[in-house]
Image 1 (cartoon, rainbow, N blue to C red):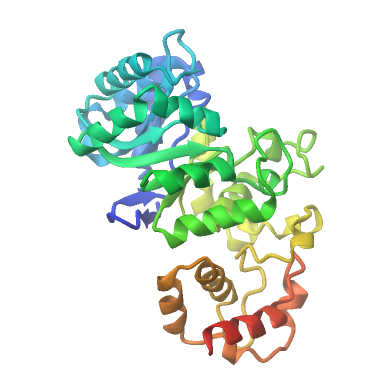
Image 2: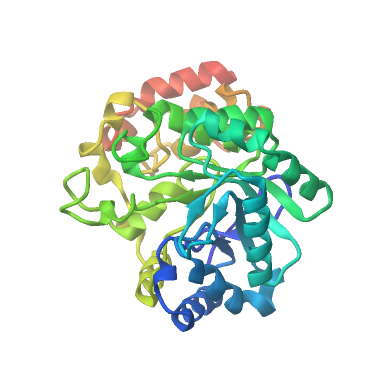
Length: 364
């Protein structure tokens, strides 16, 4: 397992976590077995916006004696009174649901308390009006919630809430389809979505990724919005390459699903390469570097993806990005304009011109 660090507080989070949209359809014993196997693999991050009530019951049994070893996303707005996932902004229902989750998981604290599923401004207005935000802030003050967090599918709404509430982590839907304005939750254009990821990295806000496979459509040739399937590892790598991303949360329904996701750590870099998207997506029209490193290695030794990333973050006002850029062994100034990266870029970015702009911006 690999781990990434939550920027503001230093917790180490597994780059693959466990989503729970589908596992609740299994019996409790199977849910416990899959969760225990995930723990054995080093997965320490679990989302509890489950599709079905048994998912939380089973995970709770599996982690009860290992609560301090894991991080849980607990959502203020997800409730399970019918046995299946429901959404609410009613304070009393939320209190009841959260208390039930705490009982099931054997803890008296919440690692990440989520302002849950805010896709419209009106959702958040109701959340505030009903006193849920004040309730969460009090729990944070009392030490029950360790990190405030937010889940959304909509860049504009996420940005607006982040302007008003100090959060440590954003749960957002990231996959090639949504980033290319394809699919049910493809809210915001490509640039808006990338700017949100960059904002998170610039402000030290981690991202946990939901729907990395676009509900499984990206893995299915018949259902893929691109007309060709991607692999599990390509989708995971795509999400992990985005600024701010700490962990990707595939929905494990079975042991086979878990095993397939864990093959990410066994395959070659070539098998993780998602440059096929260059001929399938409209990202080429954006002339936007997505930091995929397909242009590497650079004949002059530049870390082209990292140079682009620091430039984009600096343009958003991240002072540390400039400091990081200045410590690079080689900067845009060292570009020899050989065109190797332009030839290899699957998204049609003119890196020669980008390097000139970056050199002029940083002065080196």
